[in-house]
Amino acid sequence: MGNIRSKTALRLIQQWAVLHRADLEANWARMRAGQTLERIAPLEWGLVMMMPSVVSAEYEGGHRIRLSFSEGTVKTVDFRKWLEGPVFEPLKDPSYFRRFFLEAGTVVWPNGADIAPETLYEARGVRTRLSNRMQERTSGAARKRSTARR
Image (cartoon, rainbow, N blue to C red):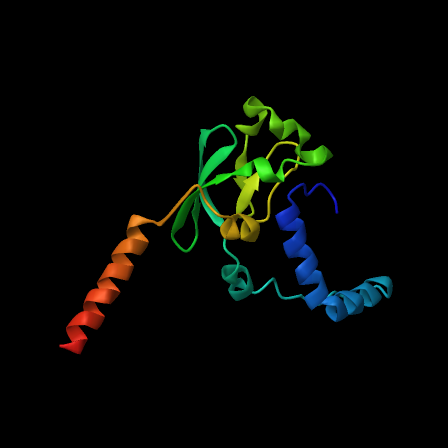
């Protein structure tokens, strides 16, 4: 699909295309007939929001990256278990591994390699915790429940 290198972005586009197949086929017929195309709704934000996304990433040494997710979880993940196959071969070199960046809610490398954000979210972390913001929300809710019981 064009020049999109992120597997996550491609996956989102493919999900959108499946949801709107009839609209896409109708627009194709309109285009071939020289008619005006109809607007097709974008991917619903609610569907995207249900998927965990990486909002920050910090190199921790070796093949470990500290990840912060959109709902507040923070974990350090060791990526060695995913470094199999040709696209991941360059990532075995720690200097190349460090060249990661964030795109479409996940960690991506210059050669297009990425790991789905839901896979990273479900991975057992070396260390996992809630962010300070989420801890405050959780403890505040617990205090409210405790006060309400009295």
